[in-house]
Length: 276
Image 1 (cartoon, helix red, strand yellow):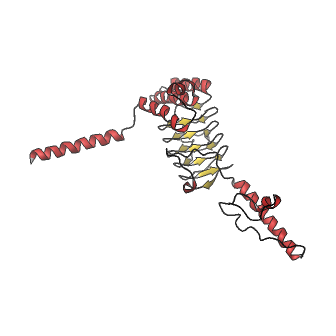
Image 2 (cartoon, rainbow, N blue to C red):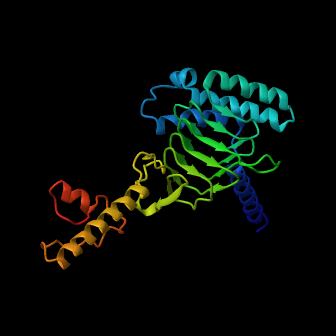
Image 3 (cartoon, rainbow, N blue to C red):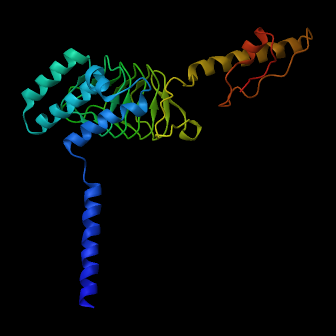
């Protein structure tokens, strides 16, 4: 009985140790390895490791930031800023050494990316060129965005202020986001507006939606709906004046699957209803 109890105790201790090791964050070099390896899953142009570590500025920037951030945490602020400055000279990517960046971070192309000092980035995040994670105040404290896991930010997008972009959200190219974004949502426009929920997006086998080019246009949709309603009013005026018979008005222009206005279709000789 005592031996069996000892074996059970040993097994329990082993399980606890294995669980603790599984939860332990990866070491410095393990993170660097993940940063390089994740590129193959998100960039079909990547061919081999030698190419990534020698001619990919996004990889250079994140590898350099890992070192600069380690120096920053050890209160070696000037060496950390100097390394960040030199990295910006060679990569055109400006990451403050104080920014906290998670695992498997990827910057595609990279030119013009700016990440502020108090920015926080989760795991498996992808940024394209021209992205800014900026602040909106000169006050000390948290003043830059927080990005959750698996967020994708399209080229030229600006995310400003101490806001939170939830996990698996997408930010369309050239959008300006100034308020919180719920997890799994898609944001488009200036200022950014939520337009597409998670259940209507195409997720890759790696769990990341890289289709940042397939974005709805809420402004274009609103204009199309106005054109539809103007056309409907003109048909009603024609009916009242007995000048001509008219087709029924479009009643689906407010639906999420409406992509073309009746006005456009009538101009091109098509029917007069919205087409999903």
